[in-house]
Amino acid sequence: MGAYDIITHCDESAADWFRVVAKLQECNPTGVKSVVAVYIYFNDLSVTVTDKQETWVSGKKAILPSMPRNNIFVRVSEKTIVIEQMSHFQLSYSNTQELTVTVSDSMADKVCGACDKFLLFRDTMGFSQEVMQEYMGSFSAQDFPTCDL
Image (cartoon, rainbow, N blue to C red; front, side, top):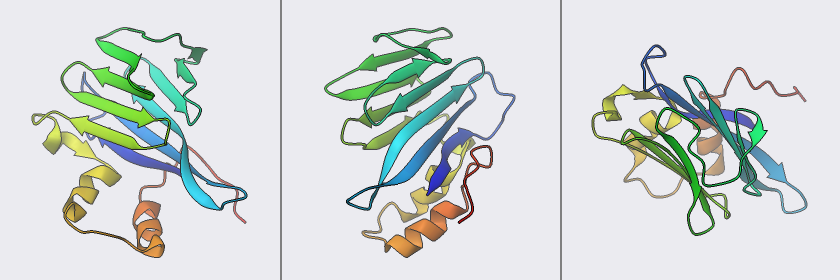
């Protein structure tokens, strides 16, 4: 398992830069692989949400709703944590560990990461676990090291 770059603004110097990293872990005793944390980075702050919907903004536990700065909003909506960057980016992470990222039309051609490439497969139903694991492996977040077994 590990952490994966889901989506990022390709231009790291952009004023509306963001990066989303999802940490996947195999949960015992079921062995099901789940998103256990989502890390959202902006130019001057970060938001972390766990699978228990605990939320931190720049390392401090957050009381929601919150508007940390620079038009970034963090709120709860129907058992889902929603992080928004004014009209460019929205991330929803539900208590069932469903992760949805939406970007504006003007941002669509400026993003990189697994979701950018994954759009090619939008109309394809079903992936084997091996194919998905191989695909996601190419988007491993290098700044989230894992133990080699």
